[in-house]
Image 1: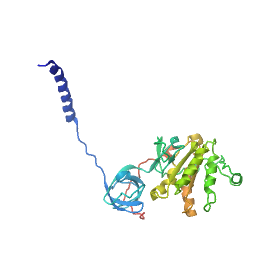
Image 2: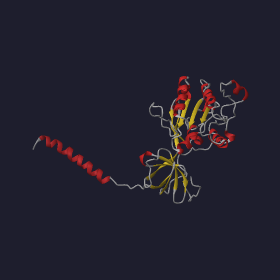
Image 3: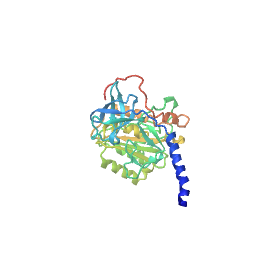
Image 4: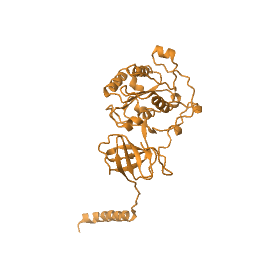
Length: 322
């Protein structure tokens, strides 16, 4: 007998014994998995059947990584707002749940970056290491829990600063016809916040890419990108992305407690397709209410960051189709 065989034989036997023991201890587990089927695809929306446990505003995934928000919950069908290119989505494709609502990355890592409403970088500077994620749909702070507006926010334009009192944590809507300087006021205000301990969010909705690139270059040249986040959605993007853009923009950064109300957010709509004033004011009020601080100066993260799990259906819901 070869001496080498006598050395290797015990090791081989021990290895096979461990494999046999692992096979005996292994127990296969079956995990139920819900799968839905797309029934119809329309402009920016889709309907599917199945997924009986899907919740309101839950994110669902389609083939190719396409995302959607479950928005219309009927008894037998679910209407979804699509958040991307849906040209390759067809009836019969599978739909899967994610178990979370629509959220975006937030934190200091977004400062100086240009992103889309989903938090994907558009500036070619690499991926974003987000500190946490925040739901785009969440309640604002109650009126009695908000701190008083006591610190002014200067725009840098003497005529506006002298006539219109603007404070940090206050809503201020810029309305006007096309080519009247609405964007110029917002850009000048952002540039004037340098060294003022203010975080600015510039949200461009439906603007031409060249116009947005010019604004970003101007901010970068003046050193304003160090405290600015730019959220961009073009007019050729999916309608669902346009819908969530202002909500994602106001969720893109959480300030430390001492400067929790030091925010300035500007949303710029396209001049070619002006929206009704009443609709603009309603949307402006909904998402700008979030940019306030607590009365005691401390941000309540349990309120700002509610559970990311979607609301469950307790009974069949019937609502107006999207």
